[in-house]
Length: 284
Image (cartoon, rainbow, N blue to C red; front, side, top):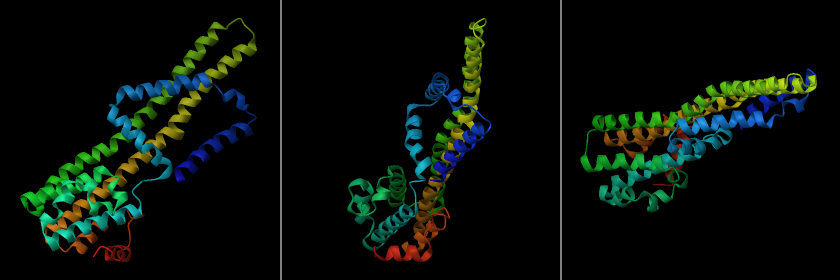
C-alpha cells in the first residue's frame, strides 16, 4: 500500500504544483502522445524480453501495489512444512515421506500448508533438494554447494523482471522525445496558420517530453526498484530452506533446523522464536 501512496503523492505533487502556477490541465491531456510513448515502450519491452519473462513481470506487477506474497503467515507455514517433513522422516524413516516428496501437490502433508503449496517454485526447490539427500546421502557441505549453485541461478531469475522494467524506464524519456519531435513536425506543417493552432501543437510536443520523463522517473523506475526488492525478498525463502536442510543433514533435530531457517527470513516478516515455537507445537 505504500507504493500506491507514493504514486498518489507523485501525481498530487506534480498536478497541484502545475495548477498553482496557473497551468491548464486540459493542455496536459494529449492521448495521442500517450499512445506514442506507451505503445512504443510496450513494443520495445516485448521485443527485448522472452515471453516467459514477460509473464513473470505481469505476475509480479500486482505485488508492487499489494506487497510481497511472502508475508509472516507464508513463512510460518513454510517453517511448519519443513518441520513436519523432517519430523515425519525422523520418526518413520525416509520411505514414509517418499510419496510426499514425489507428489507434493497431491500430498496430505503439503495440503496443510496452502500458502506454500501455491508457490510451485518453492515447493519444487524443497522437494528436489530433499530428494537428492535421501537418495544419495551426500554430506552437508556437498549438498550446500549444490544448493548454492541453484540459488545463484534463482537469484538471477528473480532479478530479471526488475532489470527488464528498468530498461523500459530508461527508454521512456527517449520515446517522449520521439513524441515531441513528431509534434514539432506537425507544428512545422502548420507554419503560416493561426498562432493559436501553432501554440497548441508546440504545447502538445512539449507535453510528450514531459510525459516520457514523468512516466520514467515517477512510476516505471520506482516500480523497477520495487520489483528488485521483491526478488531479494523472495530469495530469502530459498536461503531459509537451504539452512534448514543443511541443519537436518548435519544431524540437528527438526525444531533446531527450523530455527536456523527462521533467522534468515526478512526482519519485518520474521516470526519470533515464541511465535515459531507455538506454531510448531500443533504439528507434533
